[in-house]
Amino acid sequence: MNALPANPPDEGRVALLDRLGSRSIVFVGLMGAGKTAIGRKVAAMLSLPFTDSDQEIESVSRMTVPELFERYGEPEFRALEQRVILRLLENGPQVLSTGGGAFMNAQTREAIAGHGVSVWLKADLDLLMERVSKKQNRPLLKNPDPRGVLEKLMGERYPVYATADITVATRDDRKEVIAGEVVCALCSYLGIAAIATSDDEVEP
Image 1 (cartoon, rainbow, N blue to C red):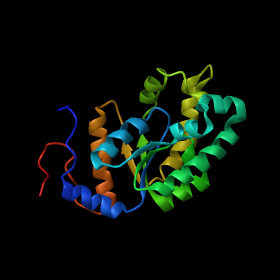
Image 2: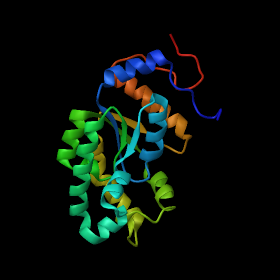
Image 3: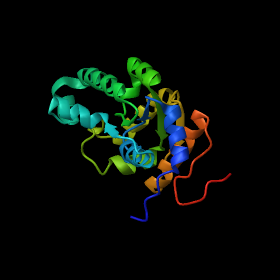
Image 4: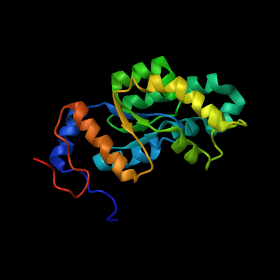
């Protein structure tokens, strides 16, 4: 248990949550960027509930994301995704992880802007390939050239992800480190002093 960072000092955490209000912290980015893993850590650090939009979609549809893609196609899946995310955004404050294509929908982006603070976890191609190659549940990568597909997605999506409120570069480091950087970026964005996300003393 000692490996986990301590919660930020109450005063700093209260200030952050006060500025956040009823908004959600919404993670966006490509598959493999770590939105769910980092999102869970940030939620734990801030004592907020965590929700994964893909898991919520699977729960309401009683089908997996790959099954939904296969049976209904991507446009229908995106429509369902949009409805689910819009509903989830009414439940803030929380940490919400979204699917890789969710932020590409203009109405979803608008809803996130109105009800949340968006955080883009930006990852390079090699890191994404290393991570997604370990999983067989990526419908968009069922292709003879998954690296080429990822490159194409990066070209299409990164300019849109770049419009997120906050960008944090993710890399092959401990989840706690990246989550701590997200919390620091949130503090900066919300205009409050950085809060400790480990046992280190806060700088005055």
